Length: 326
Image (tube, rainbow, N blue to C red; front, side, top):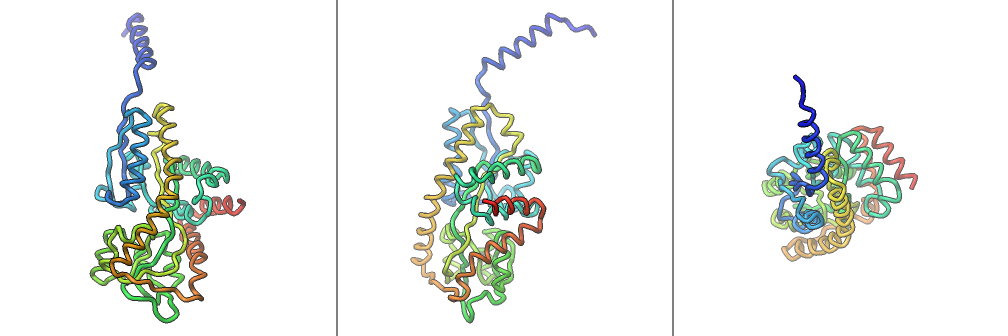
């Protein structure tokens, strides 16, 4: 069939004119989050990030919100890589099954300081690694504060965990085992129910979310001292990001960096508020012994590095070596 040259040229001209004259198309990014909607870190920080992107793009980008009721927290990474979702708010340790790099993020100091994360080369390394291996990349990585144990019964004896069944995840498994406990991997909601039934003896938990999950209703003791920083992150599907106009890309990247900086002050206040609420609701402190307490940070980092090496160990080794050089 012979094509009409004049029609082809007219169509090409029309496409070119539309490309250069039409405003950027509106985009609705499909978002998945690992945490319940009512948590302050979601309602204030993550939704604040979304609002900043929408405002900076003049409403061109909006978000379709989904949470753990749509896909369980430990299963959200894979659909992000496949483009089922465009953006994800999570704990990096939740995708340990795919790569130990997620746990490794909390095992290195650079990820707790936005400037150091950039100047050390770790940010670029993580960006390249996740893009090349999974087709996603981190928009923001930030420490959410220190970690604590919360128990149904107080510490006794030499103040180790002495076989207690402790809710955990990949990031915490190492320190639970090192202290003689039995880690039980489960999500936040399941942990509350297990504590209520008495099938768990306690949980290892971010300090910033103890009262928000109403742990004072099912536990009685908050351990001191706290230890080791946990992290959250916002990841984006790289193909989706690359398909956006540069001004929209810039708005998303800026909102991610702003989120990292806002998180520092936000989580410091959140930790103090959570502890106060726990105590006001009858929870008491229980303390690790002077022999054990100074070892908690070391055990936490050593445990994270050990667990991280179980998944793609060569990749994890490369990240840890880069960090150790700084």
